[in-house]
Image 1: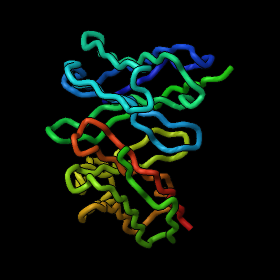
Image 2: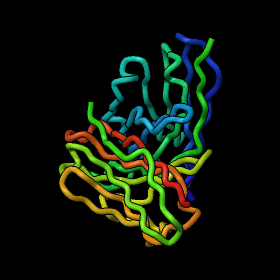
Image 3: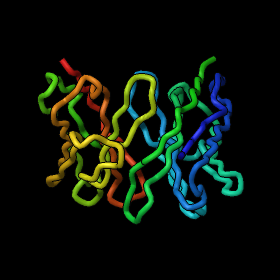
Image 4: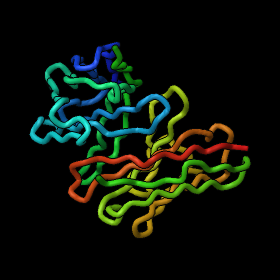
Length: 121
Length: 108
């Protein structure tokens, strides 16, 4: 069974940093591209970042570029999101999600339950 | 930046058909995907590659595409289908994912 479990969320002051983790199991993690998607309270889904299976290709939403860094450790079956210079508008539930396998497929077939990040003084 | 536009809400009686549209300029070049999200839960993929249904998704969920608009159709709506639905695709380069604005489906 595919499982994605996020951790590392919490309350942080504006300007602070936080590192999210996502532990994957039930599939060959090193074969899949992974993503972070967030959802502000009462709002819609927003894509944050993606990383290819071997970390060769990394992309960010404009809203987080230069502040967030996505990474992965295939030996540990783990995905990470380092978030720096946090702002109030970064307050969201952060989901990690697996990208569908297959060339040209850019959908997300498995999602974790999310971890809440609150940026407030 | 690239946007996908959905109607904010759709209301439907049980047993009827709900149709949710999603419009975006790059949709002719990139596949669309649809997600169902119930309160307090993570999104669930219900349609991929415009019209394919993942295993375990009921047959009443279907997708179609025409030009710059894709449509999610729920036939024979059931009370359990009440949820938020989001379309998702990518920009023309395929490097940036984008989600639609979301549609709340209410079963009357």
